[in-house]
Amino acid sequence: MIAIIVHGGAGKANSKEEIPGRIETCKYAAKTGFDILKSGGSAIDAAVEAVKIFEDDPFFNAGRGAYLNKKGEVELDSGIMDGESLKSGAASGIKHIKNPILLAKIIMEKSPHRFLISEGAEEFAMENQLEIVPNSYFITKEKREIYLKKLNKTQESDTVGAVALDEKGHIASAVSTGGTPFKEKGRVGDSPIIGSGFFANNTYGAVATGIGEDIMKAVLSFRINLYINEGIEYAVQQTIDDLTKLNGKAGIIALDKRGNIAYKYNTEMMFYGFMKEGMKEPEGGI
Amino acid sequence: MIAIIVHGGAGKANSKEEIPGRIETCKYAAKTGFDILKSGGSAIDAAVEAVKIFEDDPFFNAGRGAYLNKKGEVELDSGIMDGESLKSGAASGIKHIKNPILLAKIIMEKSPHRFLISEGAEEFAMENQLEIVPNSYFITKEKREIYLKKLNKTQESDTVGAVALDEKGHIASAVSTGGTPFKEKGRVGDSPIIGSGFFANNTYGAVATGIGEDIMKAVLSFRINLYINEGIEYAVQQTIDDLTKLNGKAGIIALDKRGNIAYKYNTEMMFYGFMKEGMKEPEGGI
Image 1 (cartoon, rainbow over the protein chains, first blue to last red):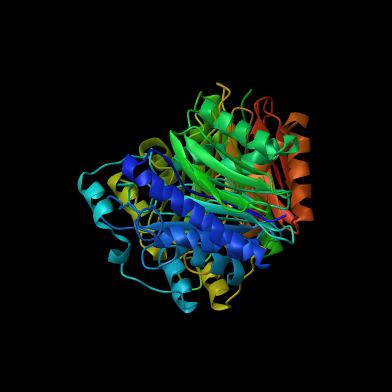
Image 2 (cartoon, rainbow over the protein chains, first blue to last red; image 1 turned 135 degrees about the vertical axis):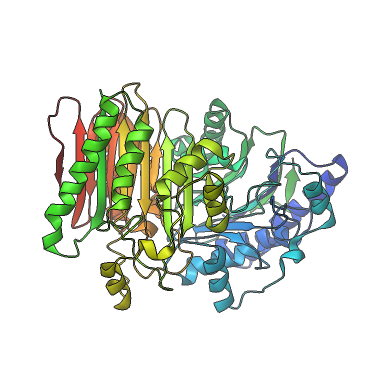
């Protein structure tokens, strides 16, 4: 069984007009990852390529199109985990690396460490020949306007993520974000935090999105472990129910080793897309 | 019931001669925290004051006396969690704040965010009047010699931490570290990572120490939740056993809402100290 599920953020849409296009991008990202899996590619590669599509798309809050922080700069975070080896990679405070998910991947693969931040992370990216861009590359007209209104709409963090299962039965989770609009400089949300923003092991993989500060107090992606014996669908619902009790807002996408897919949220909406063996086309929705 | 447990790092001692003195400091830190609890102080204040003792002591790898990174600088991390509110605070990449644990506390109390890094974290510290020191303040002769030998003894990270239970039944966890010797610039270990380096809720509190990269893949401090129904002693042992199966090395200190204390490790040793209601003197050991 091969399968992939992606999301393009939970919260509210900035405008109704953009909903259909964003769902299409979710479907496209799922299809792209699925094709990699179908041709024998790894869950890691499928999840990374799906996230990269969102990072390159200016309508999502990851890579180009990220929200600006309080100082008017973009600071990006990313994380990845290989459920087979339990190795992970994460980066935070990234200002000049075009695709932060590639940095997370290279930290996982080549660094003795699992999480690098700020200058140290960017130096590691440069040593590994990742593409460098000026901070202005990430800043779109739309997100600059949101910045100028000084909006701190913490309900709309719009992180992106992907979880994939490959034909070897390996699961990988990947996540990328620009964080919350008008965040304090140096703010790290849940996305690059193992256990909170992402987790993967031999049994399941998950990625969270929503209010990072809420997700962290619930250790949301790892929390699924508390309920996983009852199945992924139940476990994800129970995890979101726990979060609701804690007055938190978020969404989760997840899949298990049999390719069962789950997506739950207590926000107004969550953009998602998925595709698994037996499906002719990806499905997507909010 | 009031109780506190502290640790001064897991791994190996740099020399046998320093063991008795370090155990004494653990006992002193436990006693200091206990006295705060006894006079009606909060678990947060007790845990913070205990950690602050280690930060100010040049023989522990937190605050003054921290290991140098590959660039010859000290970069400090800290984390704290209030088990009552589930609010947390964490900081990473700190170079100029005398007591990083105070920064974690002020992030928890005053920031809308839960985790701040590098310059943004230090600006927040300055806005809140925390004491600023040059990076050289943290660098002792002993740790500079270790740096000059280019030792990357990842087995000896010697993080410090404390978990306290106050008379209201609130539990708090606090942690502070200089990370691993000769670490890459920007490396973040488990310490400031909620769920990995620390966790606290209404039922228990825990702090981990050891190889950060191993602790993170096991999400060690939150992992206790998987077994907590069987009691804190069993849960902590089971969590360390899980880590052993993952080829990880670490120690954990923990306590539960009844004041039961647990400390387990699969490293050669772990410096610890604790004191609870009914004890006339703190106990300590390795």
